[in-house]
Image (cartoon, rainbow over all chains, first blue to last red):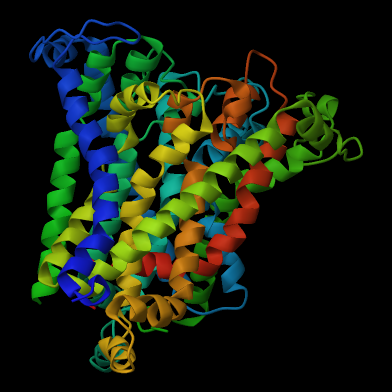
Length: 295
Length: 284
């Protein structure tokens, strides 16, 4: 039989390049990261000594690592709780058709589509220590007195508030559109039946809409969480981890340790602390996918 | 459109409008701010007494002139397009056949492989950039856009394979069967019948791949070292923000120009993207 007609062989030939590419450029580097984390390898150095779990142990003793771990969890959890609440409100508001809906959708999507590093520079300007438009506006409205002028990116708590704000800003569009997809997937008869049975707004919301949209909301939240947990762009552009490492996250710490500090093994170890969380997210998604297939 | 759970009456409408207006303002404000800043003169910008929403001096094109003539912005845009086009071609060549294979030919195991492939999209650059930088230097691709051409498909292929699988699944199997009865081989049916029907899917892959390339930051920051070889997403924050002097006008112009046009294109395809994203979570 010719290859073009042999289904088994053809399917393998069509699939092989993608599996090969992923194996070589995701699988192999991942294994390499594991190997590095067990060695004392450094940038430009030739030493490749096996040091066991020393890098991991050193990380766990390092106060800057522990602070980064705490910051990462705080950053990811808080931002995604906010995203879940806000995107639900926005998706429900956007369900109704109205004139100019497409332009609203375009504008709401902008933060997700724009390159994150560039959108974040917009925020760098908005949070500027001297020209912050937020401070100017709040002072003009007499919400801030003449002596109040917060330095958003220069004070530890405010810096954390700032990076969480930007993370919410950039993840909100994705969560909203995913939720909108979920909402419009609910058959109209279910809403009609609830209406006939006299369900009020809140009962309708909590007993029908939310339970039906929950699986999809979970997917959106998991994605947002994974992005927030592993990303360094917002931190890198806005605060460089400062002031005094109060916004340093695991991803940015791994970057500074390996690229600026030259400690590849130590950097790889820090980055690999992300892995258990990612694996848990992956398992959760797989289970959801399987459940969707069974039902 | 489901309206069952919307709030009723004038109060409900007003609340709805308020929510939408507030969120739209939150999402779009930074871009509006970029646009205003782009056209301001620098001594207008640098007077803290000025109302930042107003123009005290006439708008100027100086910031744009500086951006295009005195910075490497055009060069970075060229690099981005260069890398983007090549990555799109590689992704199409590899992900489209793979998506078809997963959708049609491999049966139940195809489903599993598809999910696994999608999950590799979750392995972040943060874990991979350290070993990949070694790979790049072994191949002598340090400080070359070719390093990005090589590495970017590692995250565009999984995602686009998954997207294409979704597209091919909704085409009825009878279509190929009819074509095969008419004398085409299986592969011939894929190329001559199924592919032309999937132009929308292919376009979606093109747009999303290009957007992912435009957005990528960590690899470009790690693999590229000289200013002239950067892409926009790294060049602008690295070289227009340096030292104490911020050229906010040109900087905001760069951010706006690189952000907003692609958003219009993206908007046309976003529904398909969402459908692909949520395939695993909803039935059908």
